[in-house]
Image (cartoon, rainbow, N blue to C red; front, side, top):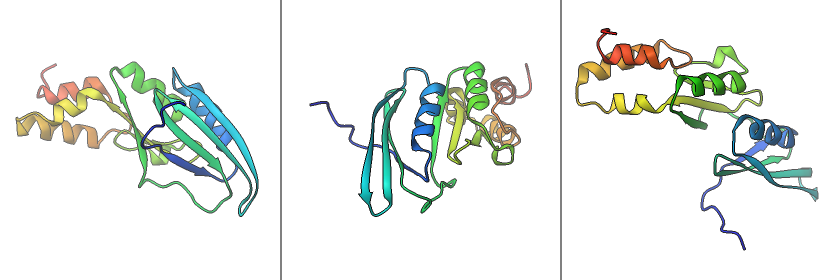
Length: 159
């Protein structure tokens, strides 16, 4: 028997679980649809449950009717090493330009993602409060993070 992941995000869709599973596994490399099943005669009617794996993280997606909607209280962080990665995920996932702010975006299903450069965490942990303040002020003005501009702010504008 395969080892069960201890905590698995479970996402409720109206009717789009299968579509979302195909979309997310096309966006994230090293990802796959692990299982898909349909349950009949549930209180919600016919329910589709799809288990996917994105970059080693298992997710369960379920189509069970329009009872719930996604909101910004839940988001998934994608840690990126390069600007190319940030640009790639931003282009693939962002579907609502009005929802873009400080590295946050919403996909076509209304799910929130944070596309974050790993270097930002290091910058914000610096003991120099002036550097942290400059970086914070820089990223608050951004929609999609720009690593070069963050580095420039970190360095004090000396690039």
